[in-house]
Length: 79
Image 1 (cartoon, helix red, strand yellow):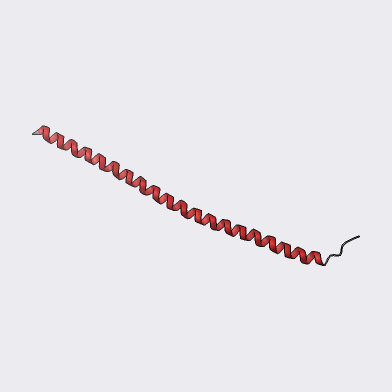
Image 2 (cartoon, rainbow, N blue to C red):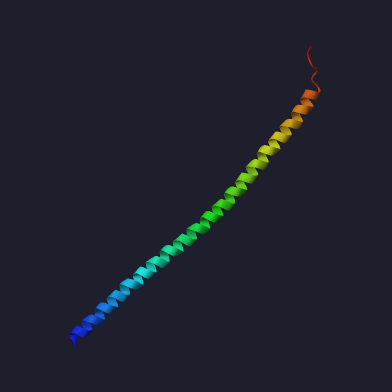
């Protein structure tokens, strides 16, 4: 009888160990999914920053070009 009880106890302890291993694996998977979603959000924000930077540089070049055309139009060439 005690031998059967020991086997059952060992079986439950093994089951508890397996459950905690499965819980740990599920927590790791959940953490990985959360991390991948965060990386996706960060990439979206970086793309927006890149677009705004390109727009800013393009606008600056366009304004500089217009100002220089206006300034150089009033300058007479020296001979």
